[in-house]
Image 1 (cartoon, rainbow, N blue to C red):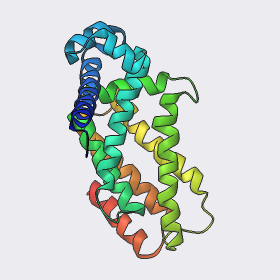
Image 2 (image 1 turned 45 degrees about the vertical axis):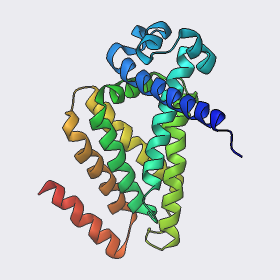
Image 3 (image 1 turned 180 degrees about the vertical axis):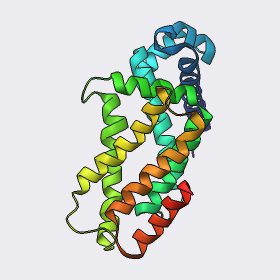
Length: 216
């Protein structure tokens, strides 16, 4: 017979953790890294500072957990679409991330600044650059097996280019060169330009037509 008391506690703990992570993302977007304190966050999340330290040890660990939670949520959202692989996956991923940026631009801006200030190979870099590169590589490999890609491509190089495109668009926004509402179009244009360069046959014609329609 299941222990309903333990189940109830577990559900409460999961929800408490989720609330803390949501509050962390909201609060750090408002006050910035330096303005965020564990005591202030505890008050906003309606938990004790001791609880925060017991769960997350430090502010940096809490911030990374909040980012991991968001990224996992976005990944899970994409996975809910059945049988979406290859280029279709890349477009769906782009749309999903764009929606999150539009929903929480302050957090997106903070994350962009943090990434460009991060030291090589730290946890933030691995999460925001290394992991997506491997994700892109998986779906490029899927398309290669279908015979859609041109011969002689270095798929790891193309994967790095896709990651570079995403963050370069956000860098342009962060530096005031484009507006927030321009991000989805700029990211789609960049992705289509890459696909035009690496595909052949009917796929190439389709992506070329889509790219031209963006500039019409």
